[in-house]
Image 1 (cartoon, chains in turn red, yellow):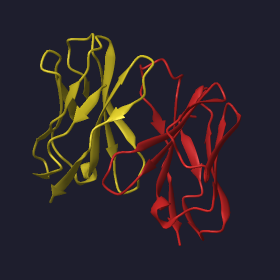
Image 2 (cartoon, chains in turn blue, green):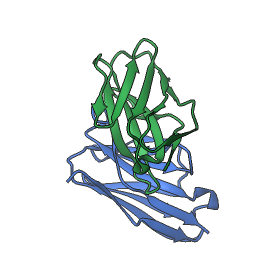
Image 3 (cartoon, chains in turn blue, brown):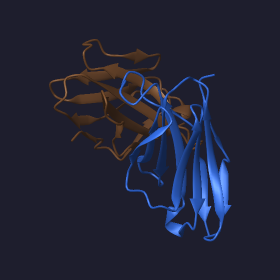
Image 4 (cartoon, chains in turn yellow, purple):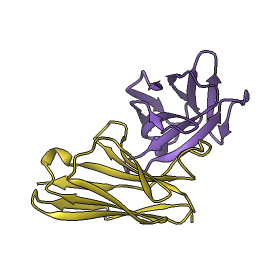
Length: 115
Length: 113
């Protein structure tokens, strides 16, 4: 299995809703990442998990809450989002945070719309 | 800090022709990797090709090849025999050991039939 699987593919939520994005990989990668991507822009790093521990939080607002329950699974919990949070949310994984050899493997993303 | 620059926001090519996408980067590291990612409308970021900085030989993957000029800090992507399926946003990216993946701003490639 050489994929990163993200669910759901599309999500529409109100500003008072609570929802979660899910990311799963079975490649034995020990680093997992959440990115936010606006149209025609490069992905922006949000969080990095290394060996199931949060290692980087890029000053992301607390309405985004990441969770790594095990080495294969990464969640992003969403609460009280704003319309400007509408974007494509990408998950990625790599062998570990230090090894640069193979780049990252990306999922196909969740298209989030906040209404 | 490392930076990656893609100076061509948009490019177009005729089907079956060759196109070259430019990328330059700035780093003080000696050991690093460079990547080209493709993001079609389906949204998934797909690794097209990678280059190890310590290797002088340019990487090739079928119709995709790079021109890596380490001294000039240049890493261009050549697509030969362009196909309609090559239409996508292309991101150049850099990563040194222990650091995160740094992306350029992207080049939107259109392939005309």
